Length: 297
Image 1 (tube, one colour):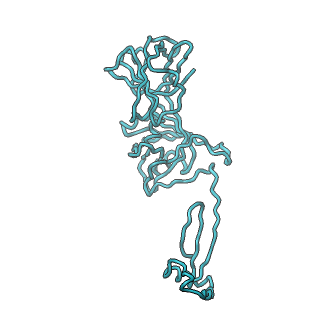
Image 2 (cartoon, one colour):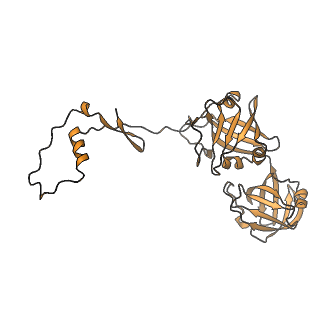
Image 3 (cartoon, one colour):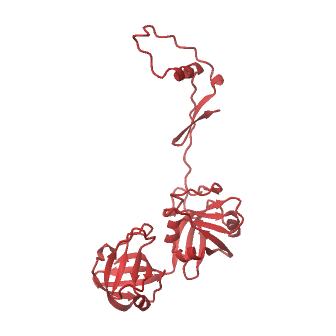
């Protein structure tokens, strides 16, 4: 049985005898539907009930936000599906059937970011993460209801322009109302039917194991006020400091002469200058992780 998650697109101009399947979108999940080839005749089923026989058309889209299936209004009505819904598509190659099961709740793991100084209830969700959660409807309304335990708040939704962004940033006011901590690892669950975003903090993950499928900001940089707080479940990189000193006379010589003198013009090598005390030079090289920073103590 081959499976995949797809959004439903209802097109009045689409043939009722075919269903177009587009499975190469950037934000879609991995699927197993490579065996469902173009031109395959299948029986479309909703749950366990046969709907009709249709022909599969494999499509391609360079700008689609999520994998989708496209069908005519009559076919969608017969399958009890509406445009914008998300469904699980299962292909049985032996029985030549395609079963569509509606999915109303989509989940993703994120590390919460917060914006300092923001008292209004706002949330910024990256475009990639937004589509994985199936929140296209919330984007159009620009608001979403968020819940954590008994706390509930209506959030103003904004989406950054970067289509690859997976960031999730709550305003400080919204985080306080929802009783969520910055840097907290959470499981987000968006209910398309209730149009509600729920938070489930994950506190039972061992510190030595990195949590899988965690959405962290990529591609776009949050505002200066947005602070990335490292999750307590992720190990901190080791730091070490290496301090070196260089005599001032040698530094001055390196600035005035770029190449070593030729032996033709310097038969007698000059005497090495007496090094000065490190306390007089103050020069240092400090190494934090993979980057080298030059500065003064």
